[in-house]
Amino acid sequence: MLYNSGTELKLIDVQITEAIRRYGISDKTTSVLVVHISDAGLSSSAVQEKLIRVVDGTLLPLASLPDFTDWTRIKKYYKLDQEKALIATKDDPSKQHAVIDNIVCGDTPKASSVLDP
View 1 (cartoon, rainbow, N blue to C red):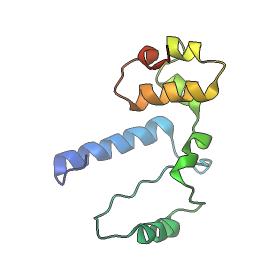
View 2: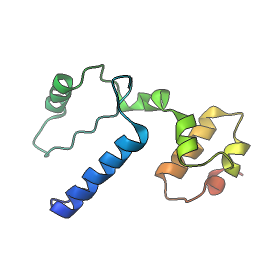
View 3: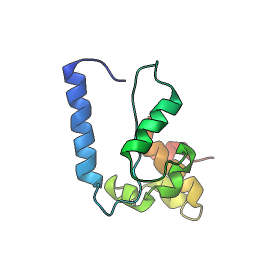
């Protein structure tokens, strides 16, 4: 949640800077997720027009994000190679991606609880 205070904005700025440091953005970067936070009065078409002006590339729907995700890099960064749930789903990439997504973005600290019985 974004609050309009210097402390929270500084924290968000630090998190963005840390993400860029860890994952890197360079001239060789081919995929970038851009998030635009604005007031409720700005229409989605106005936001899209702004993004088209500042981003050199093709805007894609968020649903295509899994196609551009570097799952191997995420597993390495979060040290998930020995995670039981990932080992159990190694032959099914879509299930494995769902497990990784749950570990990284969900509330469960480990994936073992997200496997189907």
